[in-house]
Length: 169
Image 1 (tube, one colour):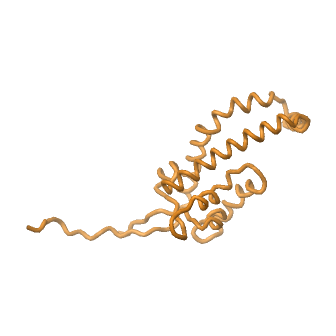
Image 2: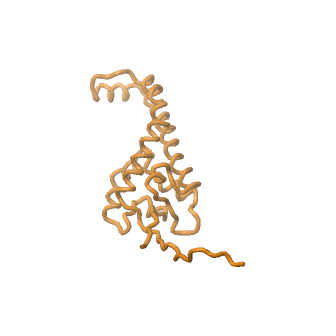
Image 3: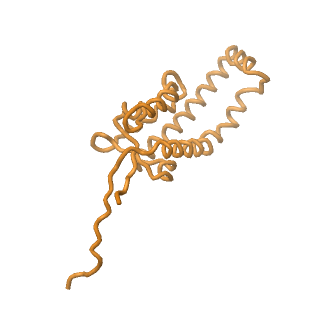
């Protein structure tokens, strides 16, 4: 006996560029998570490395004249950056989403084959707090405004895009 039920048409969907406001909210969510999980625990370590200063110039002169403090601070900063990069790389590689992207219902896809680990690394190089990578903090948002599909420069370089599923009808 044949199973009877409603013969409704299948929902039609397509994948397209994620809306900019969703991308921004997802990124803010991810930065808040990284701040709470990664950066906050390092606050005591950094606080123990540098004494309190009354001005920026006083701190600058202290760091210039005390290379051992500068080296330790640089090492801690690089470890923090590594954890932040791993947050994006591992989650995007394994799930194609970070918690912020999950909340906004957006995800990462590759322009070629499956999303690769190296593609995820290239997407996330903006997190590295060193020249020239920190230039992406300015360049990536500018590219989003002026490129088709609101793509960041790091997405173009990694041959990835941030997308969402749209429903028709």
